[in-house]
Image (tube, rainbow, N blue to C red):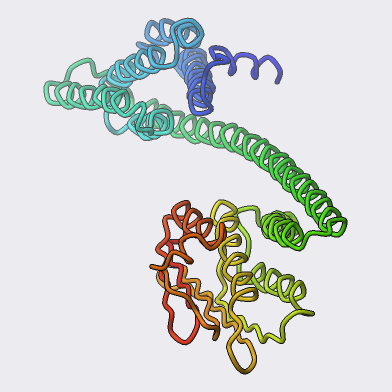
Length: 398
């Protein structure tokens, strides 16, 4: 078995991509099966009393190893063309000699299927067309040979039945061998792919876990420095930074805890983020913060900027969205409609005029929101209707 694997791997180069390695291995395998068929036929035909094919079989018995040698030194493209050209010539002679009733034509189907199996890619499409043309010309030659009764050997009815039975048996046996070997190879590659995928998932999860831990350290340091400061301005700035780092850290935490590594459930993330922001301002304002969210899954690339936008808008509403009278209310809606995510945050505060100098110079948070919207390729609308109302819309990644 090790010797067969070594033969099958002849010609595989370290620079090959996965599909090129597959073509090289499969071509060697098909060459071995074809060589086996020809060699067995060279031995069996004389025993059955069938003559007239020995020269063809002997010549082609040496051509099969030659294909593997060409594959090794000249590459799979040259080996493929030579293999199918030689196979087409062999099929012409065998079919013309044995006749259409011998069922030798059944070998055309595995040959054509193997051609598609080897070269059925856009990178090798031209070679596929050329290889199939070999069989087209072969069929034209066979039709011509039948029309003018060329090369055909006359057999007795008993000998012809024996020949037909042998051809059918060899065809079935060869097909079974090819199916078993190719299936075994596919299962082996599938297990390797699953193993590599699992390793990458573990590595990716470990990376997000470490990022989350590092961000938690940063938030702890910012919180510690904030508690040590006596300046309210410094405390406010440090708290804003801490909250932003926490918003990013929460994305990695949610991503790490789930089995699906393609994205995070942003609706679940938003609920926890709103709860954390509410807890930060709980002792300062009597605020009712409501959240209505559709089930939305976002990639990490979209979840982080979207989470930061949500953090900035809600934090600004808590800080600056107090109404003149009554209780402060913040309403958050996250909807998904035809792959468009809509993030709406509305409060009942006093609002502000975007055209005023105060707005343009007010805070880094507003500038950060617009910068993050550019990153998301999102639209940002602001309405001052009985309070502040931000509407962010962007297309969800696939």
